[in-house]
View 1: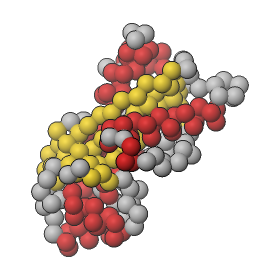
View 2: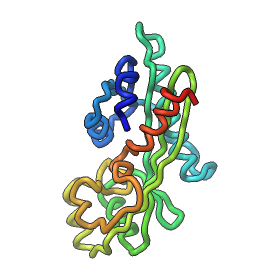
View 3: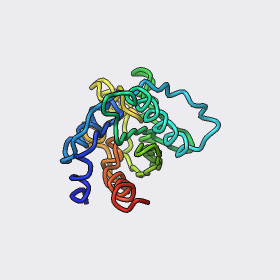
Length: 206
């Protein structure tokens, strides 16, 4: 699906507004040439004012807008900027990155309690002065874990810096039973949906 886009994108200055190694690795597997620029957008929107999907979309948008403001006066300003934000939702609660190990333990305990949970990734794209935003959803079914198993996982260090306190592409893959949706979305970037949206924006002029 990327092939019609590559020539168009590789004649542009494309910015990935993230510091996430997982997201960067996903994009590095594509032939798209891009630069990395970390956004200093403060992720402090009032969570009570938005739905979960609105929250991640608007946070992603804030990251993109901040990066555009940082780079707009460059000799060659960015043509296209992509920003993302991910959260995990379960039983009408949402979980971002854990504050510490104790917080990570509580999050994993909640997510492995028997109910499926949802990964929501908000994506924002800047192109030619216009912003497009959307949200991709994936449902995850996790095995029930004992306290000893949860502690062992958190002590591995993998929980920290991850929305929902786990990394499906790492050790956590051993206790995720199945998913319904895009695996890459759980890792951090819904590449298939992003490709579809880029085709609309760049090829179909929608």
